[in-house]
Length: 306
Image (cartoon, rainbow, N blue to C red):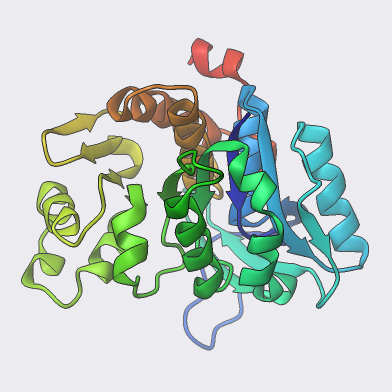
């Protein structure tokens, strides 16, 4: 069996390094520009594969130069790309600015990612059936995410379906059945506040309160990522704060995807949730010490040395 299947987006990241992020209606001069493979689905697949995970990707790219480059980058990282579909729209693109502190802002044009459909999921039943964990994000249609959740819950040939890890990014309201399948739901501060915006706890500054409130909405477990402070793990029976190693951040682009890909892999090989998060926090910390998304993702040896 593959340790994890990743269903999600593949984008070409167009990254501008700036002295500061532009304000509304403002133009600033970039210091440097790079074109690098990205997309939350592709990032998570590469992060897991680089750590040594058996990883398969279900995604869609355009029949264009960006699409071919993205497929090559996945294959080079060791990802099984048999489930990547080609055509239907141009490859997705992300426009990213990065300031000197490493903070970033991102605009995504979905392109072919928006054409990944529930029918594509049903056609890829074998890929899901072979996985222990499926990792999802929201840069593909929500109806496609819901179909993955339905298939995972139904199982395959009498065998249980894969465990569902979901990072709701970019933020969107989540159906009850999708929330109920998450084990865990992985959110950062912005995503937690969005999902809780209809409740007073959404204005709280306490991550434990966010985690408790999110658990009450149905997920089996919740992980709140806290940047340099690490991550909070909550599963109803316990709440554990996992600190992050102290590092100097160069670029936070893709750090959340590195964390989630690592988390999904460790769950897939049998770690309990706090243990998996301890490893994933170290992976995320290593990723911010280098520029770029996939180019910054560490090997298992580099994580051990951190």
